[in-house]
Image: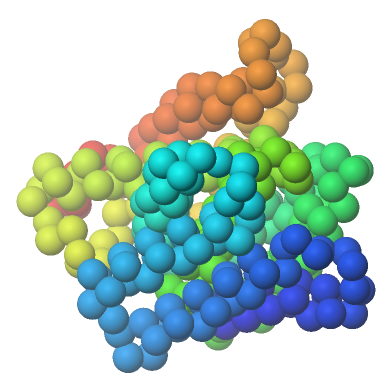
Length: 286
């Protein structure tokens, strides 16, 4: 179901000509990318093929967002490569979170909420995208409150990763300015994936196999219900509150990044210590 998400702003644009002149091509790229990636949900794709698709569309998305004349040739080429690799990383981070689609829906909801609250009034596009993400997550969440009734799928994860990449590309370009607070949304998922990868490397796992070691998975298995969505929500709210009271005397993006890197690991370790079984704290349960 997730690959349909970028089609919603495309329809919105069609009904409101002139609102998103620069962005409509980007959302077509995201929609087509999600549609192609959906093949993996139905018949499966080789890991090398998935990586190639992620790299190609990450570079393509950068090209649609940032005019080529803004960069010299070498710089443009290096940015194409960089965005391709960032696309691979983000796709895998979000993919690890599709083990509980409601958990991923909460990520989409929080992203929309930050866009609505923190986007500058001059950049209506991001507030509009925020409302679309909130509406999408509510609709999906209401249906998926009964587990396994609707799937975002790998294609949906890919779409969500590309939407974050779209924000990053706009930020680098500097014309449209998405809020820096979006960094906070990815802080816990990125650290969780990093932590679990260390566990799996320590135990010599097949890194292409599925695992059930992530924080939200262990909490869901142990407590059931919707408790597994709480750490992500608490982490985001806590960093937002801290950033409101602490001034690090640096640019906002670096301030948000420093706070995310400083607070998230401590919060994550505490969550694993108190809410995850001891043989899963830094091990695979064996």
